[in-house]
Image 1 (cartoon, helix red, strand yellow):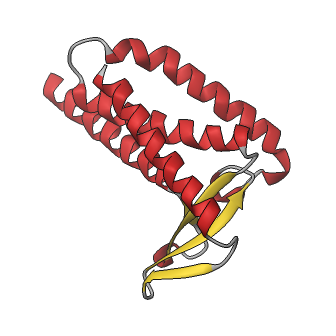
Image 2 (tube, rainbow, N blue to C red; image 1 turned 60 degrees about the vertical axis):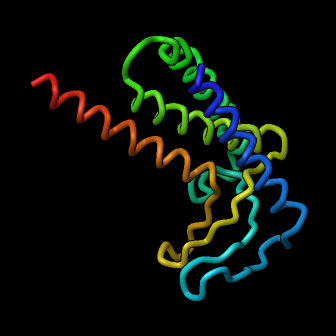
Length: 151
């Protein structure tokens, strides 16, 4: 049950931040947070990663929603079994980030992106993306640790 709670908390946190960005930041305007390192630049991503497939937003929306539903079907029963806490935590992060971006795609018809880390040049992302990447890293590490323990 704790993992469903984690998903809900992360989802709501990201929703709160995205709503704040939409209400308080000007579209496209950059606001420097740390000089030459980090800034806030609110954009509307109508596609997928790096705004790809913007002209196919309905397909991206449908596929994203399908994948989140599939993850719920596969992962939620696993959350209630003993063991694999690290793997469950990683999957919870992935699901929370994915759900938030899918929510945006369905409700707003675009994803609110706003974090611009200057080392990544043109890439602008959001906290959901950070949750997804973090969850992926945790899941991969846990799968390697589990495999190395078996052998």
